Length: 400
Ligand code: PMP
Ligand code: GLU
Image (cartoon, rainbow, N blue to C red; front, side, top):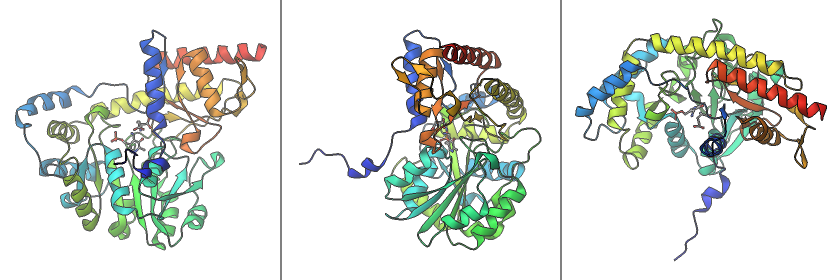
């Protein structure tokens, strides 16, 4: 008998966002003051009416549900998609999973043959390439540029597509850059995608979190002609402060939906019954809490970006959406940290954790060396305090 682990894991890195969160929690447990800008999740509690619906729903939650989610949750998802994203899917095309990450994972499992290419604009969310690598997929990264707001350009997308391309993954608004495509910018990409027969996976989990009047644009609405190969991934984690409930979904063509159901039927059986009740209450209920949280994120975004910009050696643009600032920190290279000199984004992340107690994730695992991702889903006074500490640490280091 061999005790070796399956070799498919060798190609995969552990999640860097979760690793930084674990490190920050460990330091906190030791009694250190830690400013947590690491993991991407709202600091708000799930709104009261949603928790109440879940409490009341407990009595009805003792049993398995349909594999892809209850009929009434899938109907609620379709109604909310029409209200919030401007197009109406049908419930048979919805698969509810244990978070959007689970749905994305299952998509990689059902789509990827070894050697298949998946086109991913960089910087990207850490889990996209790893999920595909687990199934032998080959990520093809399209580098975006800070001067172009980290938006993928149609000609760069065109160059990355080959006959081996199985799927393109778009994330708008993006984790980690906060870049979001306007209608026209998205149409430019759609033009290219129309000419190449591959799946288009659009992750819209941050679509409710856009600022300063920016309007989120959905590929499904702009290009219904792509529907037979389009997959929309969405969920309640970010908009409704429900990360712990683990409910997300995919809206996909019938054959793909059947495949996702097959995988789920042999793995999780169904997403947790009471969490489905909570998600349904979120989608059918009032939107005030979502708008209130968005307002709060918008103010924090300005505070975070302005605070970072005021520090010599840090450059940062104002993102259109999500809740991340993604500054270039290469201007901090050269600072001494013990017997080392900062020379990478990872060095800077570890230095600021050590010296200021700031937990934020280095850019390299997002495909963006030289950057650090600061989640600004934290109270404004926490952002103020942390940035003041960082500013002092940089000034002290420069005085040397
Ligand atoms: N997509 C993106 C871009 C994300 O940042 C996240 C956050 N974890 C997810 C998907 C997954 O969200 P969840 O699994 O909590 O629904
Ligand atoms: N999406 C969040 C992040 O990027 C949550 C953690 C994760 O699932 O990676 O931090």
